[in-house]
Amino acid sequence: MNSAVLLLLVLDFALITMLPRLFFLRTGTFNLRWWSTALPVGLSPVLAVVCRLLDVRPVVPTGWLPGTGLAAVVFFAGSIALVTLTIGTHRVPIALWHQSDDDPQHIVTWGTYRRIRHPFYTAFLLAFAGAALAFPHWYTFALLIYMATMLNTLAAREERKLSTSEFGAQYQEYMTRTGRFLPRWAQPAEQEATI
Image (cartoon, rainbow, N blue to C red; front, side):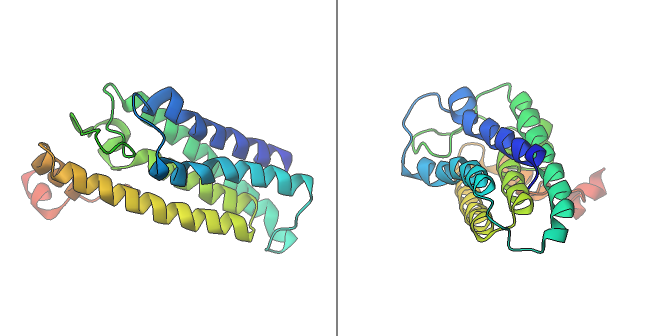
């Protein structure tokens, strides 16, 4: 992994690590659910730096590394862009998934949420995929799989909570036209007929 890719990895994960204090956490505590998601975010760049310092070899042929490093740069840039665009989308505070008593007071369906229901989670997954591409090793793949599973579980929990809130009907309609982590570009058949 070259130094520029490592720097981008560290910057991306530093931005993600700062989100709870700068943007999310209003009241409450960092509970077990929060720590089980946050720990890999802090662990990934530390392990990448340690592996770089110890010159740990990746699990793919060395000739592949320039290509995977370039792909990692694209993933890190996409992650950073998505985090910053999503922060800019929030004109109102969002409900916090890790706080059991933080009920939604509205739903956000504009900006980055127009096509993706969980753009922050998508950005996190891009960062972990970038780390796996920048340093293809068993630990980066394990962290990517763990985070994909964890974030999918959290997203499903959030969606259930929002679907049963006072905004349930509106949120369920929103779910039909947006993807969970990837944009849904095609409109549902009923909406296409009315457009």
